[in-house]
Image (cartoon, rainbow, N blue to C red; front, side, top):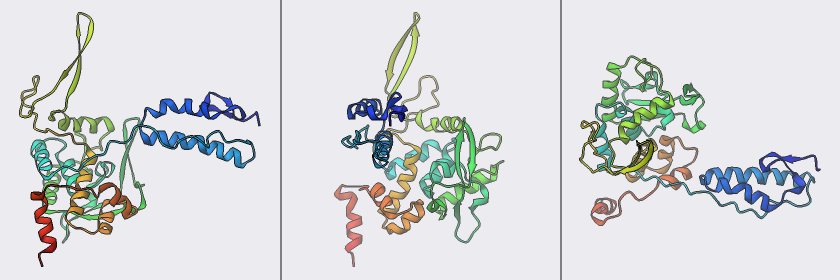
Length: 306
């Protein structure tokens, strides 16, 4: 039994490990995300539960370790109609515009948008739609396009509204690539390229920024808080027009939330979102979009106006 060593605990012999040793090992992970903590914690539990079942240990030191820890994931809210409108107005004519339109009006995941090719965009069909068949990922900052999707349910055909049809028609007319979103050479984007594309959104927000500059050889930290409607000092063409933060995933979040808010049944939303079950759809996305009487009046009256 003493031949069994647990490397993550500093090459300790399994029979010598105590609950306190595991807790100490989990301290650095507790400062990470809740998901990371749960993964590492489960790893330890699996090791010692397996050893106990195999009668390698008489005592399982992980039995009393709490399953809760790490920093809770910050909940992302859907964009309001006004925020979505302002985002589109801000990015019109800029590199992320088509990506944002696809996210807002088809609900594709980032990896699905960046892998989307024109052979899966059916603009001339009686009912225009996008067929999700590929996924994007990167390896050493190089794009890899695969037919292996996140789940089997991710393979779906999504009807697209008129505004997205028109946007994609314009994009296709000038495209030199098989990919809807591509670099200047017609190749799919790498991770760093996508990061630079999304910076067009970030630099136009009023999010507080921290900079460092050297004064007399010393690094000085200073913070800048842009004001809405103001211009970037080093590039006056950039206007701070977004007084809210937005991430690529929020585009999809907004799409799904809008479907639920419009009364689309959860099973249909589940299919359009590419979820394996409707519980995921409802637990994550079925949030209250508006909560003021003047905002909800139309919904309530429509429900009871027989």
